[in-house]
Image (cartoon, rainbow, N blue to C red; front, side, top):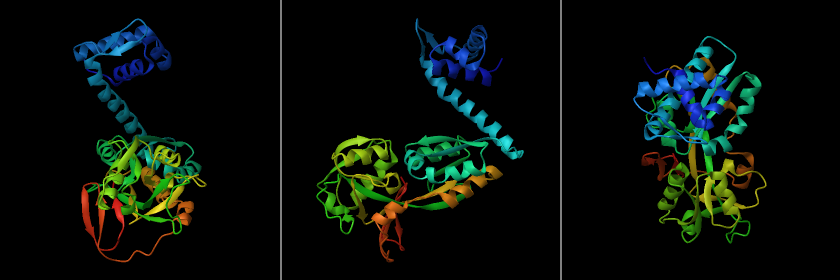
Length: 332
């Protein structure tokens, strides 16, 4: 006997619902039938996966080891079915889109309505990550059809640039810094307290690198995982922060300044070799309609002329030399 996809789906459902009874209800199967399949799975794997407690179930060490692989198998099966439907010309199905949390807030809302308008029966399932490295690994592992994120290094597949997002300094409305013009030298912020990010977040790398290039290490007042949370905490007076401008809403009650040198991050859509027509159409929509730096940020922080000269970009794997920009450019 071998492990079946149905058994893995039953296992995941019991874990998610916390009981065999609720899992059977969600799956629309009888509880004895579910229990029989689950017991067969435990026999095949050589031991118990769940500890049955009076009011709930608890994963055993073996169950904790198996669960991520069970979820991955279920996700791969969903992807295979969706890809087959799209390849056969079906107009309904689901596109799996991998991205970063900040991009799902700051960029995708400008593009996804166009996709839904033109493809109402092709749903989008977001798979969100905290760091660009996790995003690339997930794409390479087949967890999604397409990714929107920082340009990956040496990617073996189509890559289409959609724009460069501007990062901004956010602080409380009464921040004691000049706002005309609305720019601030990063080096002048060395003594400030910062709303920083947790180490797992790619935004942490970007903030730390920008400060390091300016010659200092940020003094941290509080850490968070999410860009919108950082902007809100900074506006509340807990410090200043550096976030993508596209996550700052219009009329935000805070000081918004452009760092000098500017900090940018090039975003792209990328997928594996030989994408199906639906994935290609989705990339076209995102490239045409995604607003990477929104108008209210461009108005508040107008672009300056960027003379050619010496500068450094920071990609996912450290500094590389450039000759056509004086920006700090980050991969995150």
